[in-house]
Image 1: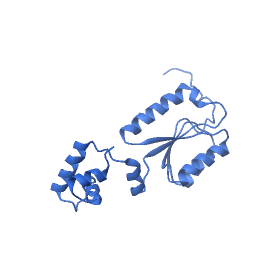
Image 2 (image 1 turned 120 degrees about the horizontal axis):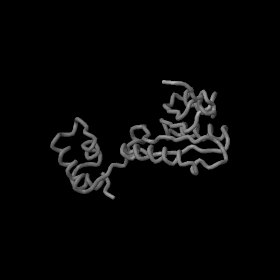
Image 3 (image 1 turned 90 degrees about the vertical axis):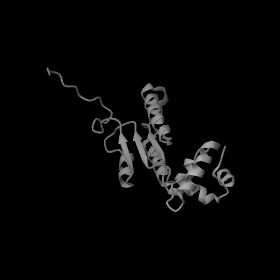
Image 4 (image 1 turned 120 degrees about the vertical axis):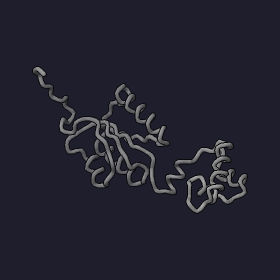
Length: 166
């Protein structure tokens, strides 16, 4: 695996100059940027997005929160399809998927809280909906972005269907 140090050595520049060139820093000349980017392409360099995110203090991870319970959600094809779709979109954006799963609501809330407090996840997808959900209360209190799949007013009940003509 080619590192930024390898590129810097081959280009005859410091690691910080190579890094700045690859990140289009305005203090690095266009000539140097072009040279280093060409070397990076030639050598097959792939940025380490986890390291980059640590440096920037940003996470490219999305947390997927399963409904609490003892039954394995993995056996439900709906969840597998959703995970595959989310993962496909994240890969295209150099993102990663993290899962929060637990038997009880208290354990699930603690799991999500841990992911937030460690700075690992800043975006969540909840694969369930529930009135007065403590996970949603936590996400709101922490000002974390989230999406709920389902109707939080239904509380696990099927949505009523209207019968009549169009």
